[in-house]
Image 1 (tube, helix red, strand yellow):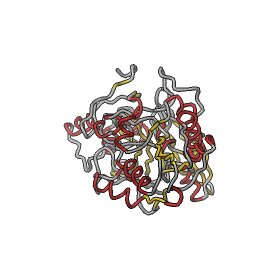
Image 2 (spheres, rainbow, N blue to C red; image 1 turned 135 degrees about the vertical axis):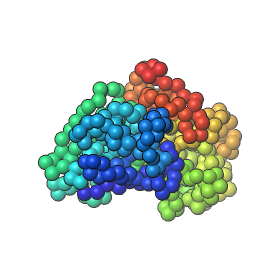
Image 3 (cartoon, rainbow, N blue to C red; image 1 turned 45 degrees about the vertical axis):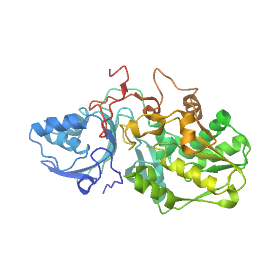
Image 4 (cartoon, rainbow, N blue to C red; image 1 turned 60 degrees about the vertical axis):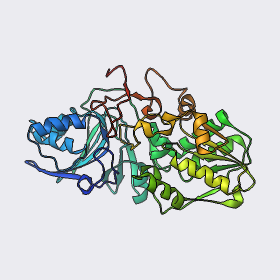
Length: 403
């Protein structure tokens, strides 16, 4: 048995001491946990725990859960874990490992994914179904929001200790974060991205000669855009697959360098053509600006940007490392201003209702949104107890049930 993690730094920042899984020795034995998501009351709880004499070994929000388990007065280990989770706010999908038991946990809103797989009679947990595909495992089902699954030599048992609330799965998982070959909440990520592209074409078509994706995350949406519009799709930009995701690089200097290393214009597909560039999102605008200028320098006569998400105007507090609000381009500029800033002939984003239609909904239910879309709307469904990001941004609004 074993667990592993590839989480990049969110709360607490980067550093060796924040590498997960976190491990601790308790009276009942060793326990390792790995956490995907972000706790929104970690600073408040950490302060209380330190005042009680708890000694932290990391700056990760996840370590708060370890200490809450340690001080719980319950005797059963699973009861200790439930007691700890009742005290935390925010998004979490967690896997925990003891000597003879694997435990999976998902927050009541189900913000982050967690799936159950099976291989040769052995049960397993993963954040996405593509992980199961790689090893030839069978997808069994999603861990439900608010569910705890306990896997041991007797099999799998399910516990649902929390009051039921409306699900708020992160819609950005479908737009960008998840791998396109995964199936999340019974929805194919690849097919969802193609539908988003089709809806985007219906809303913001412009005369052009070629649809060019910003690879790789813009490819499925660009294919959908091309199919709906009838404009040919082509790889006008080639991506270097040995470079990582630029939006999470720590400094502007490295991000600029990353864009140059990551993308290169395919000149014969661009020169003398009116180009529609399709990308998944615009965060700081660093990558988009470089891409537009690169396509112009390759000889495009027009460059139109089409974005397969609404404008990102608010930071994420639930596990996606978006920057503070003042660094988000759409929070500082209108769409026309963004187009001029990026040197694009036009810029358009998919509408909120268009995004929801692409996800199979009639539109966004403003009273009770079907997904977590706070990065686009500022409508934070989960309580933000700590009240700010590490960058000091406190410009959020709570939903009425937590106001």
